[in-house]
Length: 154
Picture 1: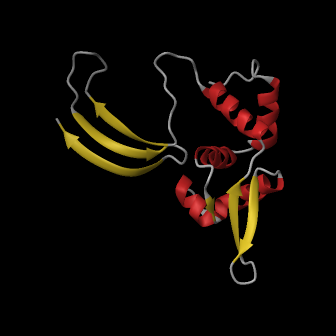
Picture 2: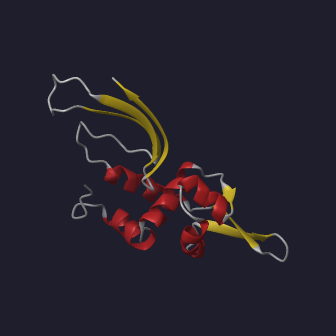
Picture 3: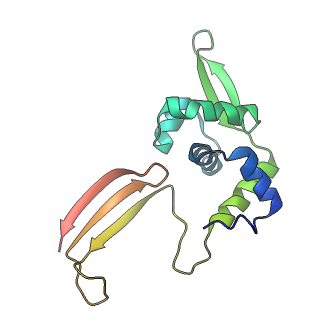
């Protein structure tokens, strides 16, 4: 859980100004981890598992704030393309906010935006019962969508 009371004031100001929704954070994190991406709302949305129409207002806000650069292409400038062009201080705040999200619990690990998860369950919650079934799934944790599931039984 993020401790907002002990959050560095600069990081708090960053959150206040730039992260007004999960979509904003998804976009910031996506561009931070893929800084050379140049794309349309639909191509960016596909990369983060959302709809282009859902993210377009957030792309515009980030462009208005100078985090993204927009370029108009297509016939008569009908298509908007976005590229990541943050100031170095912005990048530093993204890194600091990511660090603040860590729980510091030795059993917790950073949750990737997209990742492979192995699932298993049993009839009892103990260390001696064998798992009744198991599965492998690829999740997009940003959207909660399952990308692929491979089921198996014991």
